[in-house]
Length: 120
Image 1 (cartoon, rainbow, N blue to C red):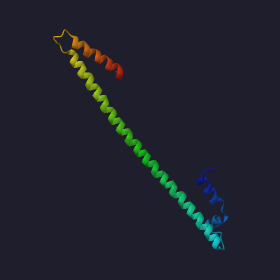
Image 2: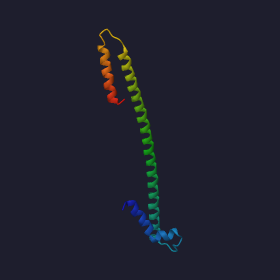
Image 3: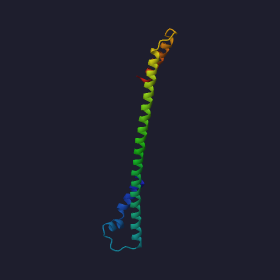
C-alpha cells in the first residue's frame, strides 16, 4: 500500500472527520478540531500532489512531442543529405575522363556501397 493510499484510507476511517463532513458532529472539543484540521491538510496535500502530477505529465508530453519533432526534422535533413550525395555520385560517375573510366568505376563502386549502407 502506498503512502497516498494509506492517507486516503486514514481519512476515510476517521470517524470525527467523516461526521464533520456529513454535518453530524454536534459537539467538538480541541482534539476533534485538531483531527478535522489534520484530515483537511492531508486532503489538501493529496489534491496538490495530484495537480503537480498532472502538470508533470503534461510537461513530459510536451517534451516527448518536441523531441519527436526535432528527431523527425533531423532525420529528414539526413535523408535529404543522403539523396543529395547519391545524386552527386551518380552525376560524377557519368562524367567521361581521360583515365579510361577508372574514376568512373570508382564512383560507381562508392555509389553502390553507399546505397547498400542506406538500404536504398
